[in-house]
Length: 264
Image (tube, rainbow, N blue to C red; front, top):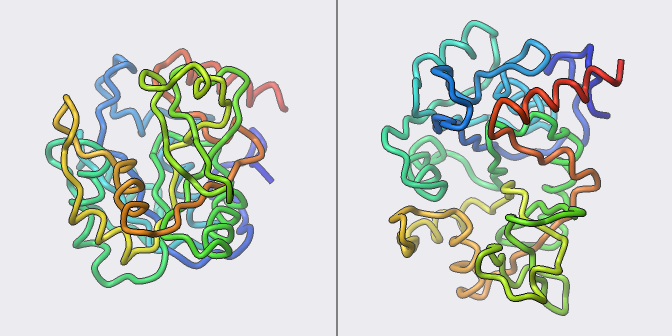
């Protein structure tokens, strides 16, 4: 059950008891927020966005939570320490070169871990513990090397489209700008939340290269690498698309705040 507007992240109860670890990406500046405050420290109902995500991961049984920090790293860490948020490991991404780069710099903090890793962003406050548990369960049931959490949107413009093969596994994620007219008609999109089998992720990160105009390392490229190695890449659809909505600017944050307040 998603927390009501009167509940804080600390009040979330475990749903599913998943066993795995979480990697939470929280290094970005959030330029579109037009604020000196790191984006993940902007608050929703009085709690920083990042705290909501950590609490959901913890309630889903994902431990430890490895937090990739960058912009104003000390401020982000201090916020979590002051709130008493529990089994955390911090990794510094001093320069941000993409989501794949964030996973690469996190490798030392993951070195003693085996099993599965859920990767999610620090600005997706409505993600439910049950959804993370369901993602992990689907990942294991499909015996996949990686599983993408997806959602179906009425208007998927701008999002990467999920292309599936005949077995229902992930064939590719086609970015909107690269999609054909038929592919743009697909309403299932990439949420940016993933579950990886850790040994498979490590192997894919070894092969990851910045093959794009921005010179960045994209975590999505690891999926193509793994599929090219003959691994199964699955896709699991989230029931409620609102859960995977990220916060990019203050207007979106205000809209979400108002939506939650309307549930009182």
